Length: 106
Image (cartoon, rainbow, N blue to C red; front, side):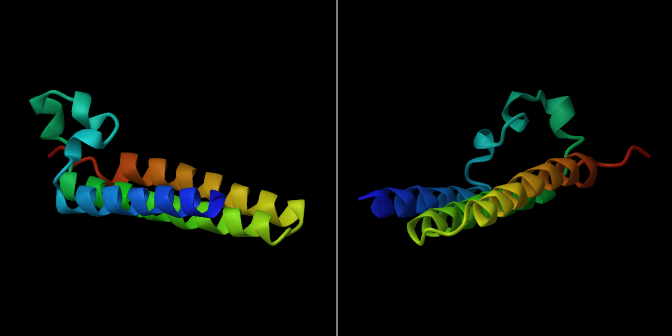
């Protein structure tokens, strides 16, 4: 049963990532949905969509990997390395979103 729930949540993350990448649900991007129109003009939405979608895909893949690592009784060290990689990806994603998605002022 836990396997079904994990796969279901991973598939939901992938579907949300695809919808964000297509531009259908920009309102789900944290921070972007609360900006006023002037602030939104300073953000490259296409790049922001790509970053958020990539992060959602990475979260779904790492969620499945961590689940199978626990089911296969991998060592705690290997699981902690996977969690560390996950956290590193989150930090890198946030930095890239802040630097790459903001339009340069001329």
